[in-house]
Image (cartoon, rainbow, N blue to C red):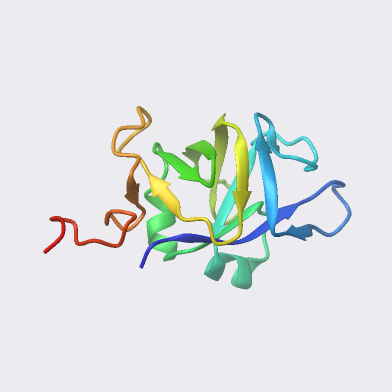
Length: 139
């Protein structure tokens, strides 16, 4: 299974509930309309979101154990490129900084680079090519 964006949220005010969006512009400081925070983007899996309800910006349809492996890697969602920086100390998910701004939408595929240099950015989070072909190429 290829990881995809299942939900997007912004939190304009710290005490107000989040606003769910179908599409958001990722700016250098995080999702457009989100309040200023220390970490630009907070990503979680759908399972983490259901269990813990963190104030995350991006909910991904992927296994929890795969998300932790993104720390130190560059990822691409839609037209935005993010550098996954670390796991939060107090909640689920991972934090990321925006390397290259651009729009992100629900159902966008998550592409993962090999490391922070961005090498291999065409591979999906599962390690399979994004086209759905087997890793060793077409038959």
